[in-house]
Length: 519
Image 1: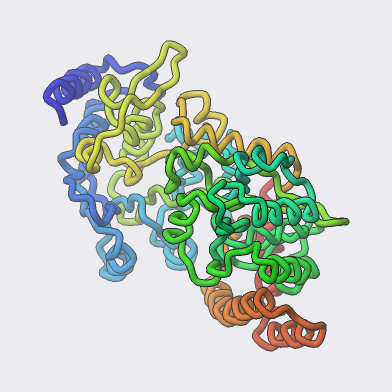
Image 2 (image 1 turned 120 degrees about the vertical axis):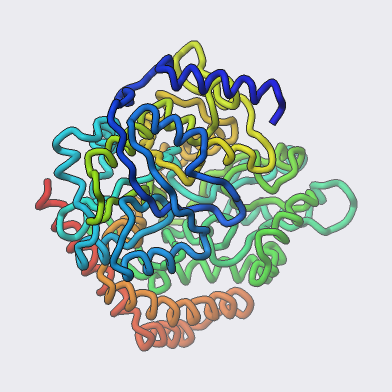
């Protein structure tokens, strides 16, 4: 860090430690001192000392709570957690990483239920935001208690991959952006035949994708035919019934269209095996017409290449409404208190101080006056990002506590330009009505499942995925007959597609029932 910036950081730190910081919602200095221990998650390639970190010294000054950290790198985290609970003597706190609260909270009763303390007003910063977010259900375990604090950086992202079309090629060929599958097919043919890159060679790649994901993969193309195909294959229809994507008519309609794209030379057949790195190389060569991606700025795309593309709404097949998988805010594990905790109130005071607005933003972005600035409108903005992970020397970044629902986050923080770009795309897709009504994430991620249910889902998905992947490759490259379709569906049933759906339906119905009971 430059000497001037270091002096600025130290000056700001001194002001903050002396109580001159603004926007302190509930982080007043405390006279008493408590000493706690914590199992702390740490990124693999970052070497820092949490116990001597400037940020945590600041929190200790504000709360009177000292924490000694036992830092564990990402690859060893799960093993360390298991050992922690097995050996009998537990730390007061478990921070970040991941934690099976159903196992250690509901089943083994080794975690402190936090909801009574939130109701008593012991964490005003965190509790108010949790209530306003409407996401409390994600943190409520199957027994109705909350054994964890959540970690959330909400950016209003409602889907993973957006479609982009080469506007320079459209302009050169005098074409309009397509709205239907038929129009898109004609545009792709023009891209193939019209030499839009102007080099006299027929080397354009109209459709460039990878395989089995919803960012750069062909799974997004199934949305054109009304099927929100996701990487777990299961989704919930508007009636609350769990559906298995590869059994739906839209799955086969998409395969038939993709086979047509393949036979006409409109789809790069390398989608079967290429990863995102090779995919990006091809896009950056300036030879691609249409692809899907997270966004254009601050990605693997070269800036000049990115400028050639514009957002394309998902096109509709005849008689269908385009339907992409809906993303949603998923709360990660933030913190938990073990039943060996020696000072619950002190622990919650220490944690809640980190959720105070300025403290929280500093934990991610660095000190105010150095890497973070406060604007005249009261919102905070990043001034610059230090290189080489230098930020982790002073603040915990994603290894710390953070809970910022979308509306609150937008009211206190100015996101970077590329974040705003993504949010703009999401707003356009929302307005166009091209996202599934019920997010599949409620089914596959939010609704808690028992250990047995999880094992069953993992086992069945592995078998079903092998069959589905093979069918996609075969159908795209060779086409399929009705007899082959029937055979594929039978293989899915034999591999447990019905049990897969039934297990997910059981999980979803139970979660919905418990949610309605709590409401």
